[in-house]
Length: 153
Image 1: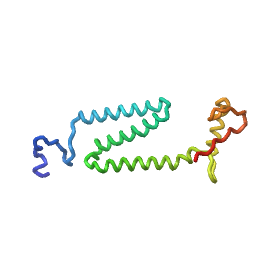
Image 2: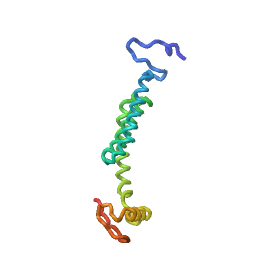
Image 3: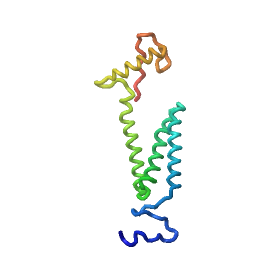
């Protein structure tokens, strides 16, 4: 080790560790852990309300905030501030691209040259068990195929 490794910090300077990162006391990490714990509770309770917008906000929005806190405070990405914004924007763009790319196929039961037989069977069994009401609130007779919804464009 060099002689300056144990040299005292300049007055008013924040103490740092051997890698040059700012050192934090235990209270700092406990506070971040507490914030992450509260966000975890909110992300678990949010979907229980049954409101789709709240579920999406708690699922994705809080996940982004938690990822940012972990990156900044535990992975020391705060040292490279310009990369945090790039990582966050890239992550959100890839998430939107994935959901937008697979969503139309996952939400449908038929396509050009494919059919999800298992999903159709599950829907039919659910309709039979549910008393004959289809997803749009209409009734149908047993054995009758429910009306297909118009394709979204």
